[in-house]
Image 1: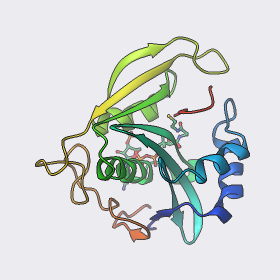
Image 2: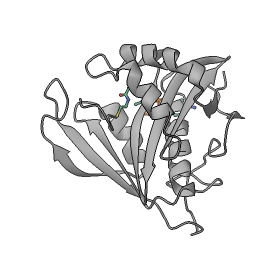
Image 3: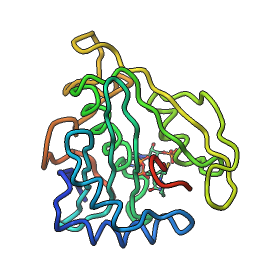
Image 4: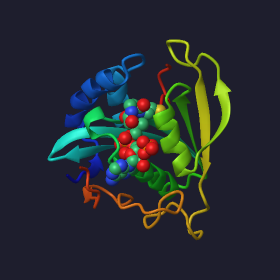
Length: 189
Ligand SMILES: CC(C)(COP(=O)(O)OP(=O)(O)OC[C@H]1O[C@@H](n2cnc3c(N)ncnc32)[C@H](O)[C@@H]1OP(=O)(O)O)[C@@H](O)C(=O)NCCC(=O)NCCS
């Protein structure tokens, strides 16, 4: 079963807000936060992943000057392990590169090895730990990815993923992939 990525629409926000409650039981963003993020397109981009017209994942990035922050990324459990998280992340990295970011930061729970693996596979490295960052007292790893300068060989532009791998979702809205699938408010991942 294939999935596609597209930009988050205003009408999607309630759906994404309820997925958020399901996926982040400890530190879900309040619905209002998604609306606030949505209305800041100058520094934000939010996308969703769909299967058969149903949202199964979402992700967002904030880009200010030359630094991007992955704000959130999530895929419904039934759809994990099919490359959707990777595609969402690659699209955000491509967006960051398009807007001139030179580095990408994120926080990830110290007890979330699955997400950590997604990030390390994509080229992120752990740069520090924030003690008791999350509401339930769990530490955050701060991770960082340096983006190559725009136009450099192997950059995160439309044709290549951040680690130089295949990335079929780095264009804009509604690109189908060829995948067969069988704490703290703010930058939370
Ligand atoms: C972390 C998260 C976003 C990863 O999403 P995902 O869609 O499962 O990620 P991917 O499928 O791209 O990659 C996960 C695995 O599937 C494998 N995979 C990728 N494409 C695949 C495909 N086409 N077929 C089979 N497996 C595939 C990857 O190799 C990877 O293997 P791993 O389990 O050894 O890491 C997801 O688990 C999630 O939403 N978790 C809950 C919320 C969360 O923790 N968010 C992160 C906050 S920091």
